[in-house]
Length: 340
Length: 138
Image 1 (cartoon, rainbow over the protein chains, first blue to last red):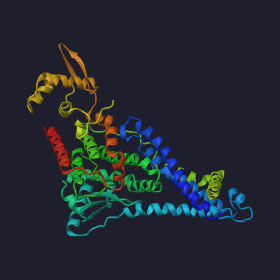
Image 2: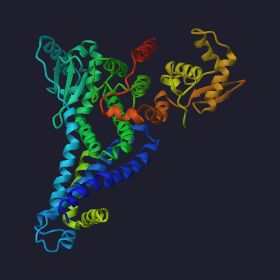
Image 3: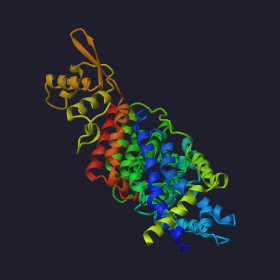
Image 4: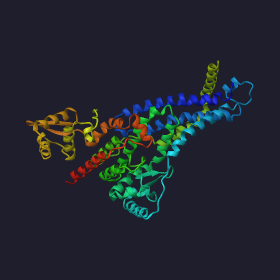
C-alpha cells in the first residue's frame, strides 16, 4: 500500500465530507436559534458564534490531536498495524496530521493576508485630531476604556475601526473625523468601545478562518455568519446607547461612514443597504425610548470556545482514536477499490 | 407577527404600505399614546390633502394587522400603538436581515465588498435622521 494514501485521501475526506457534515449540523442549530423570535436577531449571539466557528475548529482539532497522538506513541495505529503488519513503526497518522495542518494553513493564508493593518500618522492634522479625541474621551467617563487606545491615521480610505487581535485599538481617519461633530465622534467611539471590550477583531478573524478552512461547507454557513456579523454591529450600537451615547449622532456617524471613500467592516461602516436601514431604524427608535439591555447572548463565547477546543484536543488521548482508524482503513480500502 | 417585505422600499415602508408607514411614523414620532382617527388626520392634513375615510380605513387596517389596539370611547374608537417603534423593528428584523445578507450578499459582506448603499439612499437616511431630530426638538 502506498504510504501516502491515508495522508492524502484522509485529508481529502475531511475537507470534502467531514467538515461539510459538521457545517450542516451547525446550520441546523443556527436555523433553530435564528427562528427564536424572542429577543429578535440579537438573541444568542455567543451561542451562534460558537456554532459557526466550532463546526470547523472542533473536528479539525480532534483530527490533528488524534493524528499526533497516534504518531507520538511510537507505534502505529491499529489500522496501520493491520494493514502493514510487518512495519514496526508507522508514521502515516503523523503525516496525515501534517497534511491536514498544511491544508488548513493554505486555506488561512488568504484570510490573514486580507487582514491588513492600518498605519498610524503623525502629521499636523493627525496630532490635532488626536488632541480632539483625547479631550472627548477625557470628558466622557464611559469612554475611559479607550484612553491610550486610539490611533489616528491619514489614510483617506479609512473611516473608523478597531484593529488588533489581543490588544485592540481604535483607529480614526482624519478625513472622516473632520466630517463629524464632537457628539457624533463620541457616539462612534462608544460603538467602537464595545468592539474593543469584546475583542471583536479577534472574533471576526477566527470566524473568517473557520469558514476558510471549510471550502465545501462554508456556503451553508455564510448567510448565518453575515447575519451574525450584522447583528453584532447592531448590538454594539445598542450597547453604546445604553452606556450613554446619543442615538441620533451615532446614526449620523454610521451613515457618513458609509459614504464612498470609507472602507471599514469591523467598524461603523458596514455599508450593506438593508443592514444600514435596520441599524438606523433601531437608533431612531432609541431616540424615542432609551433601550434596555436585551437578548440573552448565551454563555460567553471565548471561554466556551476555549473549553470545547481543549476537550477536542484532549479527547483522543483519553478515549482513543477509533474514528481516525476508521478514516485510515476507509481511505486505504477506497484506494484499493478504485485501483482494481 | 410577520410582515411581508416590500421590494424597493425604505424604513417602515419596507414592511408597511406607504400610508400605513406614514401614520405609524406620526403615531410614534408624536408619541401619541391614545388617539382618534381625527387626531392623526389633523396632523396629516398639514402635510397633504387626505380624506377622513382614507385615514380611517388605514388605521383600521393597522388595527387588524395587530400594530394598533383600540377601545370604544362613546361613538368612536381610541387607538394606541401596541408596539414601540423598536419592538416593531425587532419583530421584523429577522426578515430584514434575511433580505440583507442572504446568498451572494453574505459572501460579499465577508469579503469586505458589501452591497453598498447608493448616495441617494444615504441622503434619504440622513434626511430621516434630521427629520427625527426636528421632531424631538419640536
